[in-house]
Length: 482
Image: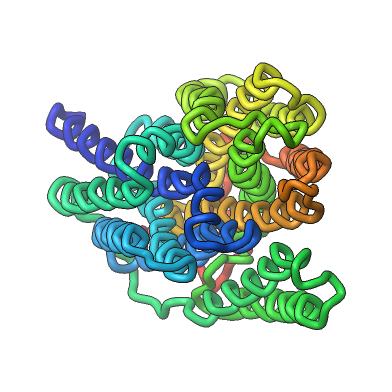
């Protein structure tokens, strides 16, 4: 490769790093100040959790949809548009006069989920060597960015004020959009296809119908007509969505692609990893900030609670640099399996041993290592399991499923933690214990799914043949790579 090409790769990777980091930070910057937002907007804990859940729900829809659009109209063009949406959503959030407005702004920010599949697709297009390393590092940034956002939120609030949690990301994403427009080369485009709008509507419908009763069941009543009606609606829409996805020419989430062993096993693991990661990071700051008078809290400030989460973020980021050589030596399956087992152990530790900050630091470091191993490895497995022209769809689907898991996990954890409140108005310690044990069960399921992940090298050699035989009309010839 010529020196000019290597320089272009470095510039492209630097811009993509900023773009992915911005999206990951916006997922979590708000988490440590949820209690402050609850007071400022005079709302309850279940409602304020939707500041996080709405962002994840929006990203669940935008991630595969924008990944599909990028494959057709050009990944660079859609990356610039996605970063612009992040900037606009950040400005809306900074100016939000009410909790409803803030939640709506977070929905706009959720469009930033398209950054992930678009970035992975650009890496696949532009990097002729070390593609696996680049993908692993970018994927690990989604985990470390989420943790780092929690860490830096406190200093930002104490130094500049709460609203700068949105003004700063707006500035960074706007700069990243300009840099992407000027510095990233144009991507090849595929054939124009009809966008999967109806599948996107149905996906949004069943997720919303599921998450609302899960998060609000304690206040509405689990046997109330509203909760039962929404759960039935979610089931009906889920079935309709799944059937439609197998019949439309251009699906939002390709169910035929999901039949590939390397895809469905890895995505199932990703679902539960997202379930645990987002939920744990969403509620650990609240646990740490709970006053000592509660009998279990630490009375930590926003900055202190963020600092306690730093080992998890650092471990998750650091492990992203070693997963590629680990995969090369041992294969993807052992790396992912070890990651899920370590994560499961960390959640059990959080549930049973949270009497001191030292115990939590050990558990959080384990959680960061396990999550980082899975996230940085799974993206490479999925990309290696499909033909080149489906990179955007496959990586978008993987990132989307992790986000769906996160939205479900945060809603489920909110329902568990807020189920019982003590006389002082704080959730009972038992709620956190049960919630972390539920997350551990999810990672046990992920470990079982990891046993079915095929050897990544074999997947690379056979993916094109298997995809052609199972997907029929949804697959274009490899010469139409987008």
